[in-house]
Image (tube, rainbow over all chains, first blue to last red; front, side, top):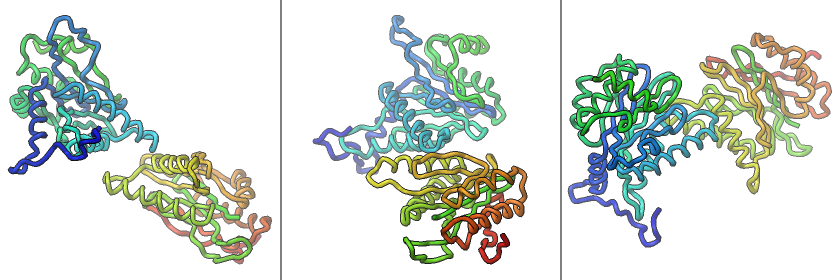
Length: 234
Length: 201
C-alpha cells in the first residue's frame, strides 16, 4: 500500500473538476483486449479475446475469466496484474461474508465491496487507481445479474455491454441485437458476434474465452465447447 | 435463575421468558421484558450476565437494522442466527466475553418459522423446542412429551403453561410471571402473561 513518504493522494483534481488519473486509467481499459457481457433470461455470458503476442504462449495455462464463488464469475479489460489482485480480494470478500452469515454473498453486495475497494485506491496515499474495468456476473435468488466496475469505483448494472478495444462499436452492435427474451445459447452466440466485430485475425477456441452463469452456477467453457459455438457462427 | 422457553411449529414460533430481575437476594422488578425485537421477523429472548444481555442484544439488533438499511432487504433467519453466533464466538476468546444464553426465533417466507438455541460458548442448534436455565431443565421433559409440529397456537401456549406450572411447583426460586410472544408470518404478537396466581397446578 502507501510507502511512508506518501501519505497524500496522488489522484488529485484538475481545474476542470476531473480526476485525470481516473481518465487515464479508463484509457488503459479502452486500450485493453475486448470483453463482452450479456444477460439472458436464464443466465449471463461473459466473453473475452485472449490476444497472444507469440505462438509460443501456453494458451490455456492462464485464464482471464475467473470464478469468485460457485455462482459469481468475473472478466476484465485493461491491465492483467491489477486484475489478479482484484480477483484475490473479491474471493476473500466472498469468503468473509460466508464466515459471517453461512450464506453465499449476493452478487450486488460483492460488486459493491469490490467497487468500494477500487474507490479507495483513488483516495489513498501513494497508490494509483486500478487499470481495469471488471464485468461481474452472478446468479442469486433465482435471477441473473451483470455488473461493470470502473477504475473510479463506479458500478453499473447492465443488460448487455462491451469494454476494451472497440467498445463503442461493440455497444452499438449490442443495442441492435439485444432483447429481453434471449436464451443463454443465443446470448453466447451474440457475444461471439460482438467480439468478432473488432477481432483481428480468425477466432479460435484458443484465443477466445467464454464463461456462463446460470441456475447451476458459474463455469468457464472448455475449449471444445467454445469450438462448437464458433462453428455455429460460420 | 432466569428461564426462557421456546417452541417452533409449522406456522409460528412461540417464546416465553421469566420477568424477574434480581441481584443476589434482592428482587428489583417482576415485570422485566427480556425479549428483544431484532426486526419485524426476528425475536430474541436473552438470559445471562446483567448488562451483557442488553449490550449484546442491542448490538445485534442494530447490526441487523444496518444490513437492512445498506442493502434494502433483511437478513434471513439462518443468516442472522449465524451472524449472531459469529459475534459470540469472536467475543469468546477476547478479554471479556459476553455471558449470554438465548433463544432466537425467526420467520421468513423461504424458511418458515425457525428456532435457534445459543449459549455463551457460541454453540448453536436449530431445534423444534428449546430452553435455558434451571427452569428449562424441568420444562424440556414436558416439551418432549407434548410437542408436535402441527400444534395450534393455543396448544403451544398450553404446553408453556404446563412448563411454567412445573417451574413454579419445583424450582426453589420464585418466578411468578412469564412473558409470552409469538412470531408468525404477520410479525410479532404478545400473548397473555402467564402468572402464578392464574395457574391451576
